[in-house]
Length: 225
Ligand code: 6GU
Image (cartoon, rainbow, N blue to C red):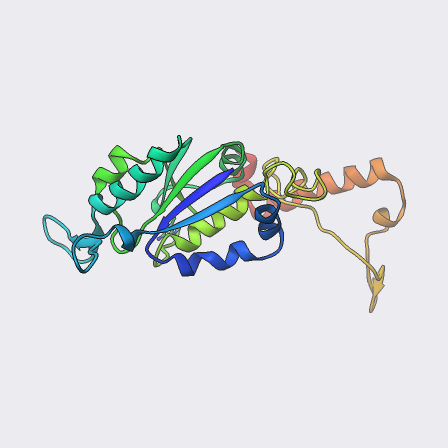
């Protein structure tokens, strides 16, 4: 999978791709991530990217022209399955969207800043808009990093243990059950007996009960979906 990220702050974005599982996926060639500094497509000597909004109001808006230049250049080189715009005024990212995106070949991610982008960018280029939650970040860069992490780890071959993504929280709309490791008794705090029993069918049943219980308590909304 190839991901092209268009951003005004590439440095803010790079570090999450330089560690652990995501780095390994990139080193193995399973995922390829390219950063494009929108500033390089800015207008005039000052490489202008944004302007005040028509109709008045506070906040600058990213102009269509530099974004068009950057996206068109990429599209001339290959076909893209999705052109995603990271913005708080969109549907919230969930595991199902991450699963779907992990099967794509080429995607572009555009990260917004300021008041956002000219609506015509969204109308003309964007195929999918994603928010990462109901709160506002200063820019879409961290959100793009979150999206990429969620997606890249799902690409086949990225996680060492092929089954581990399948038992994630949310993979079946349930939160994960509690997990324990040694020691089995820590200052009187005992690991549930069943986990030490070696009775694997019973352990699975316990885990699934606990997952359901936890979901019911913390995220009952997930059970309605
Ligand atoms: Cl994608 N962008 C910004 N700026 N804020 C957010 C977000 C995205 N998702 C949640 N808050």
